[in-house]
Length: 261
Image 1 (cartoon, rainbow, N blue to C red):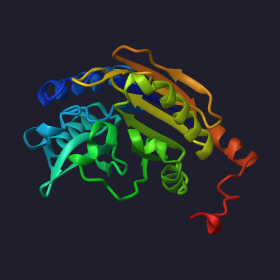
Image 2: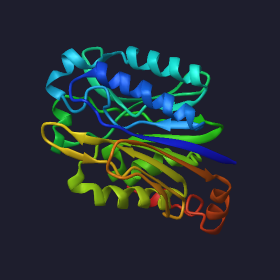
Image 3: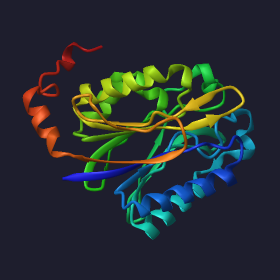
């Protein structure tokens, strides 16, 4: 089975949800024109890291985001990994990812588990604590947000249910972009899965972001990579290779969880 993905490596207009919602609409349309199965967006695309303005900017209960993604997914009949957005629920702020099927159903709502201190995330946002797994384009999948990829134990926890594709959405600054690539490749090798990782481009008041979104196969090979500008990068990959890789080196079978603390 082959899956075709669109990596929506977009800019994010700081503290301007209206502009950012329009940009997402534009890129879903572009993805539909390319006949992709899944389109993937970066992290915190509705507000950027305007954390001290979340009370005015965060999406209440994620309602606006979910309505838009559901409408677009149904209209264009494609699956959307909605990156993540700043949401507000019960007086708390979250960094939340919504995944919507090509039938317009929300199949995953995941709150970022690991909050990044260097960007002051933990001072404003509440960490999530729940796993996520879902089927997208008929493929067992899971997804995480940015800093989560520095915690291999968490990705192994999510992947142990048989995920064949791991989606990553990020706002990863250019000063650490080399680590971004290495970590994405390592997570693919460890979990013997394809990783589709989308980073933003552009600037906020404190950081520059330079993309380098990529698709990595279960052996850690980069099979597609975007540059440093805003673009829709399209890539296809064959999931049949996963069975061969997992059969040769059965890491999930050979685990020793009785020893892991």
